[in-house]
Length: 541
Image 1 (cartoon, rainbow, N blue to C red):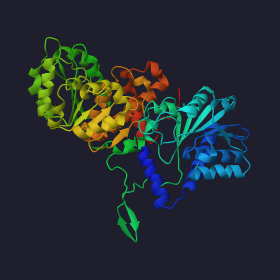
Image 2 (cartoon, rainbow, N blue to C red; image 1 turned 90 degrees about the horizontal axis):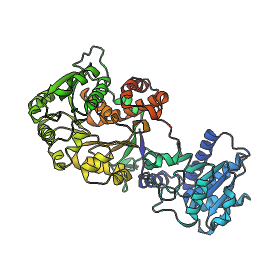
Image 3 (tube, rainbow, N blue to C red; image 1 turned 45 degrees about the vertical axis):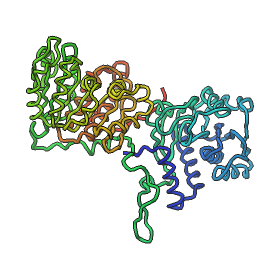
């Protein structure tokens, strides 16, 4: 897995590279420019005779742009380069690279008004955005804002250095305006905001280039005279975010014993369904069957037993007492606790409804269950008025809300949840000591110790009813096989999204349905186990 860094973490890695390892800032800037040009050649082909426009700000991002301009000249391209401001405002490495261009006889055009540069944006095949980097803390204004609008209206292929200018590095939320890039070349490590929406869509294709920074140096220790000593400015321990990948998922999947039997591979209990939502039980059961789990028990209201039995033939159906509205009755509590005692993991919630009596059943069950338990859908809605209950549950918990369910659970607004998906997920998981799967684009898995994991798989075909039930069945099936709640959640969201990515190649994002996903789970598993799975390259629509 790759570490997804915040702006502060990247600044710390830069500091360590320069002051601890003695790598000059000019060398890092040179390597950054080289990486941008190589990425441009990789994606755009030969740059000879091309006439790109390089747009530079006054900070280090602009310094990278000056290096790119010089290296484009060496590729026999014919770039133009503009500086938004005065050369007298430059300092440090950016000034040094500006001066190197000037000394070669190349003229960087200093501009102070949009009227000075409008014609330069016309008929360009490529524009390089080197205006702002990771340090931006407010919306672009004045000339910078006007220039970003020119870039976006140019119709050119836009290459952003490190981040599209105007994008917030830590949460993927754009200021207004923000560059819409076709290719973003980011330095050393991917920035967190590049893998969260809408930042991911604004970044286009993402390339990470090595610029010589030791990305494994967290600064927590150093060596002096042969003795390891603590560094005074460490990165934040336990607050790291990671990008899930197929290698990690393949490494944590449970191994299949050749002499195993169904008892070897665990038993999962899924408590799901009601009169109007029998499909939720069916979908969760179908996914659990495909998870590798040895035995699936579906605890369902008696009234839907026939429907569920015909659709999930491999699972054991347990009809239970129901209310007159067709929901699970409190009279089922003893049955459920006995079933949970025979299971390795439990899923609770898909389609159970929010009848007050079913809510009472759920709260009674959670007060007693000890096995790892996943709560989803109506199971979460039933907890909305009982937030303190989570801290009293004995069982290790996995919660899988979408933003609306999470908003009801926490009292936040759904828009605020999406504006800081990693931050709110981490805060909730650490405070409640649960594994939180915050579904959406991109799904975030947060651990009780503060670590977060961003899932790169999946597509808009998942934005349909029932896909969450599939995820619940898949995760509980993995937990039943002995995976920790955190590992099962990470593997489950990756496999779930990968199955969707495989499915849309044949069905399109319009036609993919929740019931199609179990059909593509075998291909997703196979791709990971054979080392063929790759996180999809994100491109603008």
